[in-house]
Length: 160
Image 1 (tube, rainbow, N blue to C red):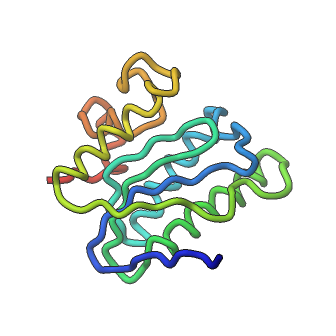
Image 2: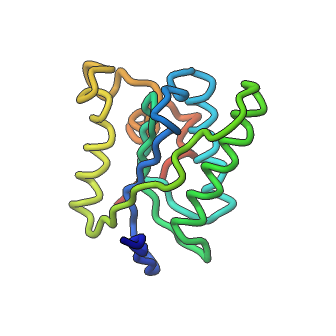
Image 3: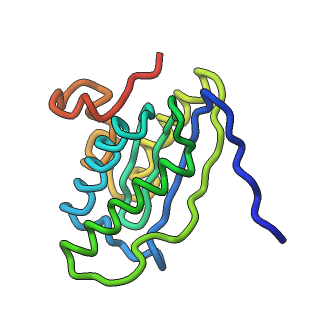
């Protein structure tokens, strides 16, 4: 059976998930988690996308991304994952794959569905037993979106 093709349309919003190679908890390391967060923030300026939410879990991450320019979701994810993997391997001395080759994406349409996806994303560590409530988990867009960490406001865009 062949691969499913991604739907590429201008203005679509994607809920993406990428998993570490062999589900190793590489992102459990605080430095790795923060580096991935800043990689997402840095790349949004280079590859022209809106980042509405993110959640970094020990062995995967979720993000809600809306490409705005000439780059597709596939291109954006390729660059985010590639940059992170190269630097992760450089800093840790690890050799080999950091991520599973592909990523999962789901198109989200409409304000209500995007807001639901943001809430779902922020509740991921609660469902996984890593936090009592979303505000207790460091590696997410929860606080930048709720205004407590003003220094991180550049990371996420507000969906109106």
